[in-house]
Image (cartoon, rainbow, N blue to C red):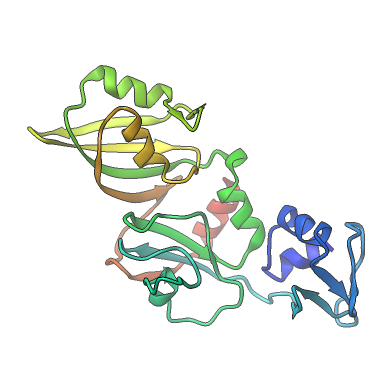
Length: 233
């Protein structure tokens, strides 16, 4: 069952297990909660939350240069722009891999491959994500060392990270930061923990896959070798 749901792009296999256990799946009109249930493709009708799902014949993989001033959601009850306003294709179950907050720009992967979403977004994957940061204040070595070693967010230390000071001005600094977690607003909150305010934040890479050649709000399909690379992380 979970393999079938993942093949429809509805969720990863692990996410599918949660959906099944919650009683949200029906097979031929009957609620099914057994994780070992088998599906006969072409004969059985499967719905999730009342919506029929069918296997995706070909997954879609997109790189978007998310601009600041939009959110990574399907819709917003406050009327703000979403990342879907920049993607002019109709692909079922196309979702962002992870999130970039409203004021953050940069590289965002969107796909309907549920297993890849889980692989890249789950904390256990430790997929490196690199950000270009501009922050207020001075960054002496002891502040950089704190950021690299880990700071406390909500009572839990962040994992070790790579932090490079690229340029130090009188009032601001430019840095490169690579993290392997995906906590909510993590980079901003790391800097807040050392009493520094981030004024510009841009994700420039996921692993070795780099943002380049796209204008803000632009997008393109990933090449086959890029997809295979992401699946290898």
